[in-house]
Length: 436
Image (tube, rainbow, N blue to C red; front, side, top):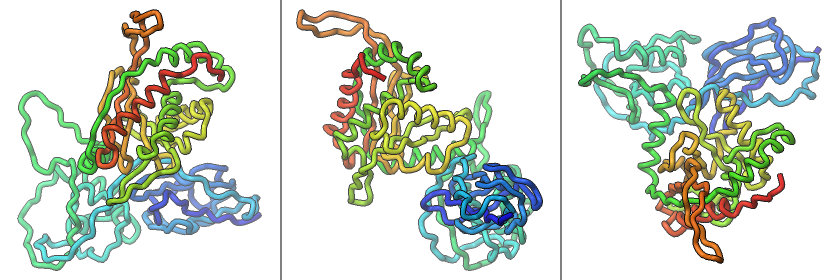
């Protein structure tokens, strides 16, 4: 028998530590290959950590609530697999996606606060601090919370319970105030209702969940960051519709995959990004960062009604079969909350299919730090003027609007309009006799 150390995995480029939320196994328990051993939390994701080997839990090295650096061992397993042969721990799967902006540097100044429970020296995990910032909870208020974690540490469960009960609590008396020296946390805009407000008529008040609040904050931030402009093009996609109808059964028989329109759209976008590389970029101050890799995000709606954007890395390197497999895999994993952290990072351009909901067109909001995003509308049959050598005629064609939103700071109208026109050209010139 050999001993194997279960390592705290790396959750992303900027993540250096994680908090143990819950042990799913105890000492002496048997663990199967890829079975989840513990739940962890960072300031971006909550995840489960699976075991890369089968064995028995010999020792748990930390308690729930402890904050552990990436790369450190958190448990020791006894296994028949040698340590050298054991694979690197697999990347955990996301159970809840969060993207909280880093606040500006705190400044020290004199302020009037209510007395705390003398918990100023208490340690708070990055996740707890970020939730506090997001919910507008000051350090003085945070110090008054009773923690259920190790050594009285405030856990994620404690602060979320406080947020939930916060509005219902009424102070019984005015507390005494005193002059103290504190580190004031920077103010962060939040969508919470901070004061009672009356509404006329028959209404129902529904509090946003945390993911919806984060999406709202990110969308407002994007509008404040980028000078949004949107160009529209109508494309004749009749050849694509006819080709797909002709080959979809054969495609499924050969590759056990459904062929949708999304991989065809992504293929056209990838080709256009090679033609117009400035659209595949980002801004850093006064510098333009040209991205050599073409990593296309595909906006996907979750069962909760929220949105997530998994990323197809090096999309221009995949053929149509590879794109179809990747699109289907990511869409399924998104619906099942099984995306890995690196599958939602590194996007350089985004495609959103608003036609899925029957929308003719839309004006999508740029996903920062990207500089452009494309929305594809519903495909509808229309009477269209067709130019032929024998003269103009009217025919029934399958038409679709493309909406291209771009950052006017670096993408001018000529470039933004030319790009979406090129995407439409690639779609319109699709070979109806193309082999799969």
